[in-house]
Amino acid sequence: MFSGSWKESNMMEINLEIPDQNIDTEALQVVFGSLYRDDVLIKPSRVISVLAGACMLQLDGLIQQCGETMKENISAKTVCGYYHCASIYGLDSVMKKCLEWLLNNLMTHQNVDLMKELGVEVMEQLIQSSDLFVMQVEMDVYTALKKWMFLQLNPSWDGPIKQLLADADAWLCKRRTDLSEKEPFLNTEDGAPFRSVFKLVRLQYIINDLASARILERDNILPHEWLTAMYKNQWFAMLRTEFENDNGPQEANKEEFELNSMRCGRKLSKDGDYCWRWTGFNFGFDLLVTYTNRFIVFKRNTLSQPCGGAVSLQPRRHLAYRLRLASFDSRGKLVCSRSTGYQRLTLEKDQEYAIMNLDSRLLSFPLYVCCNFLYTPDWVKKEQNKH
Image (cartoon, rainbow, N blue to C red; front, side, top):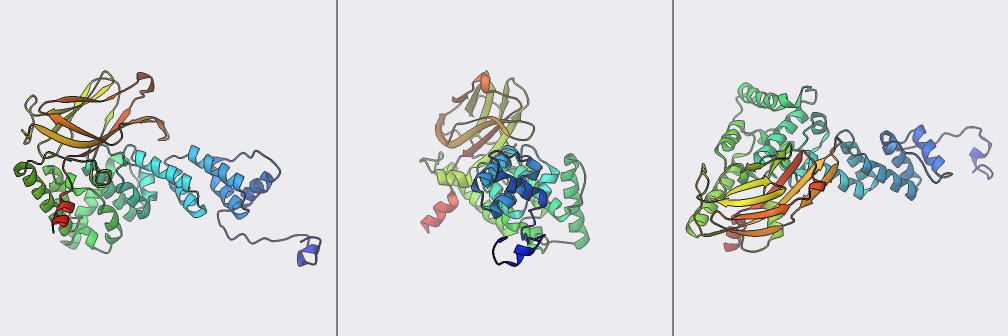
């Protein structure tokens, strides 16, 4: 260009058009400098601009280094920006790492600024996944989405996370009152963009709890036909469990488990002895979970402990499950994790079974416990196959 018959040959200054807005002068200095040095220091705050410049010049080594820098520095502040950038420049491994971080942290470490940044497309991927680390029960997934939707529609809201749900509920209530709105919110113009996300909530595990079902009715967010279909599905499932003596999943079906398993979790703040159950009607399967002496134990409670609901007296009950444990550092990065993988288990009346024995050297508190359960087959699919 400078020695041939080009117009730039006699110019003292050349203006370059850089179509990518992520690229700035400082990024270009780093990128051009990498041509002359094997090692380049990339600041996490500058990595997106450097990656953009590296992609423009097709510098594979620098692109890879940017990807590794991003994966090492994922946090609540960076995860959305990194994910969006990785999708633009084709860094699939970074996108995967960002999604893993979000699946682990969306529910366990709720963050107002993060919820404001999360778009519909990413939220769909999170809510439909059985790897979502749910704290408490599926109702809490619905509640988190309600808060997220409120923030998407009210981005100027600025308050503590503890106040968010109350303000979201007040906003919905005011809207219903002011507009005399009888139409479910997702059927309105404002609510329509969020239908695809709420559709992925596993409603069968919300309507099995009376208090939660009442909140769904009060909020009037979900289309009535969604709930009607789910109530019918659960009613037939209960009748079959009672009258056809269906005692749970009979065969391994991982696809069904991934799509339809109950998601629930618990935070153990410090080492000690814990025993708990997740509320809701689980077709007479009262499952107690115990953490003691570094063991996690499942017990099918039939007659030995009081129970607030109906308890199945069938001799044996089957369930499919997966239990995961995790602890995180201050940025939400996994410090340690364990998983049982997908398993099936048969329990007799009041029988206990040790699910996991933990190595004390790997334990770090607070410890997050997340479980997936499948107590019955998917009755909707069974009915469709029959007809």
